[in-house]
Length: 297
Image 1 (cartoon, rainbow, N blue to C red):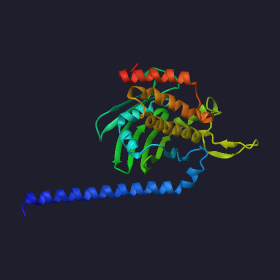
Image 2 (cartoon, rainbow, N blue to C red):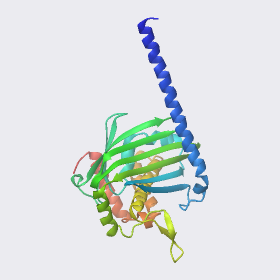
Image 3 (cartoon, one colour):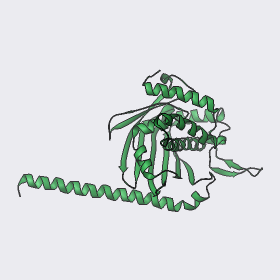
Image 4 (tube, rainbow, N blue to C red):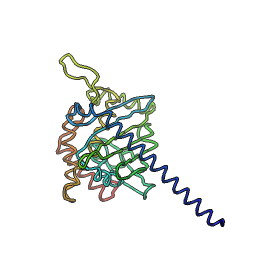
């Protein structure tokens, strides 16, 4: 066999084994998420959210993490087609109160998302902090999707941001989603968080129940875990609102997303209410105009 033929054969074998490795890893990921759905079946059925949704949070050695597991009323094909697009994530992430602007750049697999994070009112982008996420879709197939966004640093000494989603089909009309949001924080971030929790955030709670009050009502978690739970839920509801808007006419989708996201957050007003509907819609319409125009004012 000539050297040229040996090289071609070697390349061919490498491609075969590479494909086998990818397929095996994908099958393992799909099986793992199906196993998770099975193990959560009872909790999903008896969820306090009155829908098949489980929210969890953890705090460990300066690392905060929130996770949502949910069955959603969307076909997997719709979920996978929409959420593998970096532009779609900009359209949904800006629904969050603190996201002032989002821009996607580059081409797969080297795309980035620039997320301007600020206060809960309209402000110049020069006053916001831009978090630059590396955007990847490591797996997309007929029965599994994984999207990953990572950023090395964030505001106030926070770091190692991770926003990830994975999904599988359950039947023709439903998909099972797992979304996680996590970051690490240092001393500066901890001090800033303690100041916030002692002032503007002193009455804010998360979703996890830590006990029962004297009135018999559940006592919800406070502190930094409450913070990450609120933001995790906001991002999950943004995903749902974006997917739900796809059934509308193209020129009506943006407004539908805004209204649906606000309505969804108000169902959890104890945790998520920050302003009235009119104020939220006015702020986001201005921010979206700026985003569409590509301005930095």
